[in-house]
Length: 304
Image (cartoon, rainbow, N blue to C red):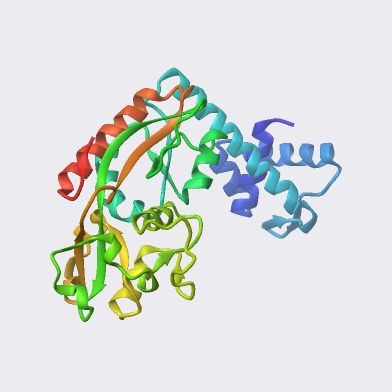
């Protein structure tokens, strides 16, 4: 069994026709047909139901097809890894990003990343911090944009920017006309939080001087900042939001107000984390520079 055999198998499954599959593989139809027959003999299993001009994958062969696709994908990853090892600026770059940053940074950052790394297209994974760090340690991603410190024996990081937190309230809220407010003045019973697993939730709790959500609203929590904002606009409570979100919220000024927080510790430090042994430091450095440039151009953060 060869990789070409698996390519013929997948092509025939996708096209459902020997002629079209052979054309896609750039071989003659007899060659493809003969290799499929050879593969079926080797596996001792009929892989396709042949009826008329069209063919379809036999029900018993569905799992075989799944493994064939996975093997070809793994082979492509292997080739990509080898190419990246030769030239760290070539080959897809797998970038993780937490959900409280991705929607507000990515629309502006992706064009700059494409310009900075024309031969290293970014493959994005959006997830919470804990899972991104686990994927980083297991070499499933190359780098991750995080708002927590994760430096250690295997993980290093570089600073990107500092982003202030703001208190967001509905237009009818008593705080709506304030220019600034101290976190201690906010009623914990009003505070809306993200669900467990989001580092932004933990940062919100620290702003309030709390170690847990005990004593805060337990009936309303959300998986996204967008949900928290809509609940806030509807008068169901107040919430914290990163400045980049507020900077980009457009015409929501008629529904909500963003109020500056007083004191220290009212910002998050956004960093780019990566494995210390990565062969792609040059590409990761270019990512960091592009993100800093983009974030600084937004006027909503302080770049490192």
